[in-house]
Image (tube, rainbow, N blue to C red; front, side, top):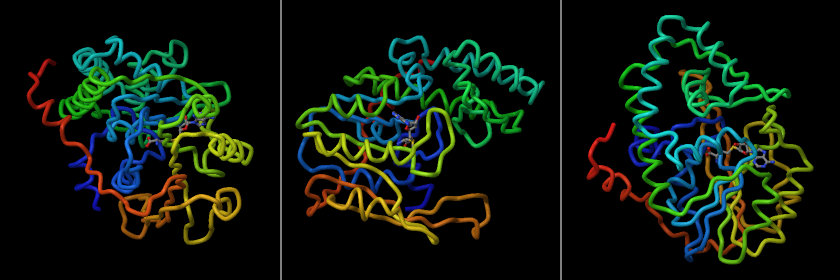
Length: 308
Ligand SMILES: C[S@@+](CC[C@H](N)C(=O)[O-])C[C@H]1O[C@@H](n2cnc3c(N)ncnc32)[C@H](O)[C@@H]1O
């Protein structure tokens, strides 16, 4: 499905992260269990794009990165509203337009001392490529995206709409956001829950909150093997040069679904890198249900007054 079509149909959250599954959503949603589940359990929420679009009534969104969790709890308890975010980005965007890099660096330094959720949003939306990366001293270290006019009115409206939509979903569902290790999240899942796991891809990330090694991969399989919940795990299957060997060894007793995906490393067509993405599944997927992304959130939102 091309990028424009996907974007028309799905809800895109306000926080960006490398490895987000926006483009893979149709593939993931189509492979969800066809029997109803009780709680949606997402041990590696990242941007949250998968669970936010699945729109479960009850969910546990967890991540080891506290800043993501603080941000969504700030929306939940209304410390951050669309109006507050809009005013904040307008004020800060004006200063960024005047001072550029110097101001970005100042904000980054401030965030690394105070851990303010609005500063996190500002950095995430003005840094290089919408990335989240922390060093060993727990400092956010993504460089400036070099777009001083980043927070133009249209962009601020886009971000405030993204916040408005997720605030609506949080208010109308029973969703919990918690900072904890994946092992604890999986251990707390029970029969009739559904776990969607999207760990960092093994051997690919270098980041304090986002590192992943063989021990983690072995633990993930061990905890999932012992769960009574249904689960689906995203991983990579192969690219032009390599295969993910863990699929033939550690994960060999589960079912897989695969699809080809292209990562863009630049604007040029030849920089499209094909990769086969995989889903590891512990339930029957013989009859794959066609689950459409719910449009109801947009319909319901369009009935609300513009409150910011
Ligand atoms: C690939 S990203 C998830 C992307 C997400 N599915 C999306 O579409 O935006 C992996 C996430 O796992 C988190 N993470 C890494 N190690 C973790 C751990 N040990 N326990 C819980 N979360 C962890 C990272 O902070 C990151 O947000």
